[in-house]
Image (cartoon, rainbow, N blue to C red; front, side, top):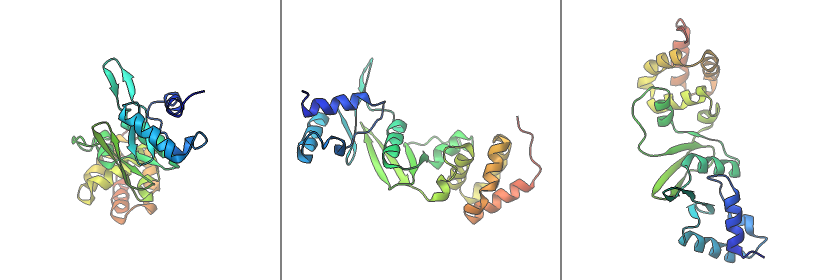
Amino acid sequence: MNTLPESILLHAHALPEGGALSPKEFLHLGSRAAIDQALSRLCKAGRLLRVARGAYVAPVSGRFGTRAPAPEKVVQALAAQNGEVVVSHGASAANALGLTQQVPTREAYLTSGRTRKLKLGRAEVLVKHAPRWMLALGTSQAGAAVRALAWMGPNHASQSLASLHQSLPEKEWQTLTATRAALPSWMAQAIGLENSREAPTHG
């Protein structure tokens, strides 16, 4: 029969990269105090990483030793575990859509859940609560456009939307314009103005 730490590690290694463990998953194997102690010892030994309160992940083994899992995989695993929506931050969205050359210096995501910081080795990842309108279109290009516009701000809305009107697929542009009622007034107005212009030719 496996010991408690062995059982925890077996479960951890059966998960895909970034899969998160919660102490509550092991309550059938022992007391909460014993589970917490086992998790703490596994972290000290480098067998697990504590990424947030009550959340642990297994490091990934590679040719050059072990590393923390990819931040995006951990964030998505925690979101699935907690029933949250998680999407890219506005700065990342703006960069991906070509609205800015500025590369975010820190990994950050937006969530329907609470704001928290995740510790992944030496890196810290911010998962920030966002209003519903920022998350409504999910991971679609139209959703990324909404978050990019929010990050760029009202002063850059007209220029950003002219670029998006050119680059977004027609279906994504129509999705963006159809969502105006749920968006802040300045953004809805700017989208309406750009939409009233003659549509550019899409590649």
